[in-house]
Structure formats: C-alpha cells, structure tokens
Length: 124
Image (cartoon, rainbow, N blue to C red; front, side, top):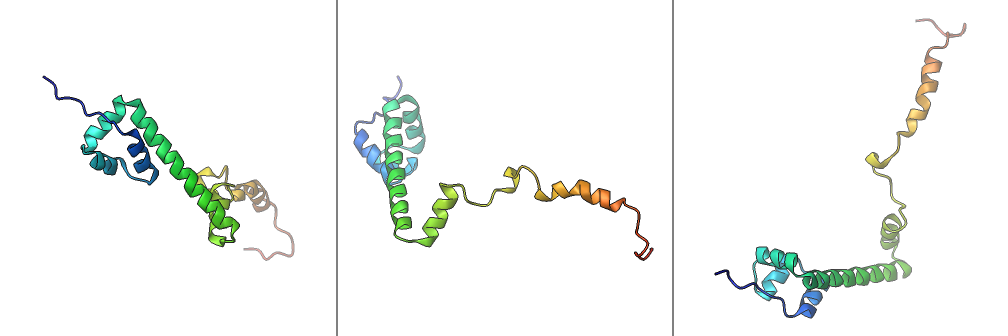
C-alpha cells in the first residue's frame, strides 16, 4: 500500500511565505515536509503553484514600488539602477552587440594600406 500523499491545506500561508521571499526549501520546512516532497507536491497541486506565484508577484510589486519611491526621492544609485533595468540604458553586453563598431572602418583601412606611397613619404 502506498503512503498517503501530503496535502496543502493552508494556501494563504504558502502565499505569505512566498511573498516574503522564502525559498521552496524554507517553505517545505515550515509546512513540515522535505524538499523533494515539496517538489512533488508542486507537480500535482496547481493551487500550490498558484499560491507560490501570487506570493512572488506580490513581492516583486512591493520591491518595485519601493525602488520607484527611492528613485523619486532622489536616490542617485536607484535612478541609475532603474535606468539600466527598466529603461535599458546600460552598456550592451559584448555578445548582444550586433557588431564591433570598428569593423565599419576595416574596408577603408585596407584601401588606404594598398594606396601607392606619395613622393614626400620616406621609403622603407
């Protein structure tokens, strides 16, 4: 006979734990199950996943609101951070750059290198 499945009965508690940033392992500890059991519970209980997602969404909204308030109160580091993350004002990553800006000059450099030397240039 198989062991009885653990059931979540307090989705509000799960949501609140998720909202304060608890990891799955921490939430599992609070509700009295192991991490692997908690993973299996998430696989079969859609309401559990929804509670976790709602909690994380609430946390994100609270953090974003606080960041905006800090930036609007004049926090320069927060203005820079939000400019980079929200407005995309950061330096592009090397792999994201479409091409090296110097590559536009390569054909011209080759052309200049192949030009005949002028009379007033010293010869090699």
